[in-house]
Image 1 (spheres, rainbow, N blue to C red):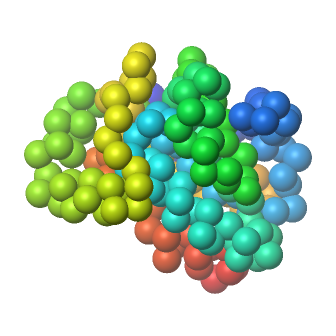
Image 2 (image 1 turned 120 degrees about the vertical axis):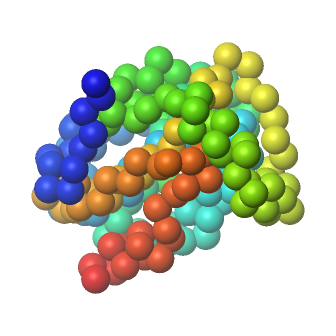
Image 3 (image 1 turned 30 degrees about the horizontal axis):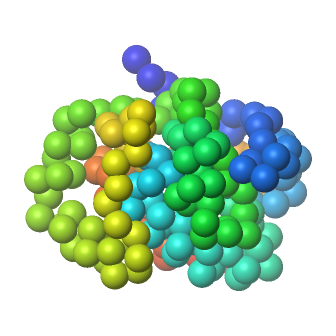
Length: 184
């Protein structure tokens, strides 16, 4: 049984490196808010669209005292080939062995993946991603059944929101993230 984090939990700390080789330690961001987003893989069109949306808001969020970490279950080479081409102004982290995914209880679910594919709204999300330039691409060796999750962590390292997605297309609403960044 995977342990799911709850609001009020202390966010598990970690130290890793981003795609540029910079050290990323969650503990070093105490005193700032953090959006910790777990994605499927670096080639995922829907994940790339979400990163694109984060990039559009990142300057505002940074000014409001919030940093972003985006984690992908992909090797570094794939990160650079796919999501890394967006030149995100925040940390993109490759976690091909799912160490951080396990630490935060992020699930793999064939059933939820099938439900996502069958969901009538999925085609709209895929069309939106395609319109933004993100095509559906199979990433060799990727965990196709990984389900995303988002965590909002306060300045003291306490999880304020733990959003474990029910579908691949189910993300924490941007408006919720905006309110958290603004301190509302």
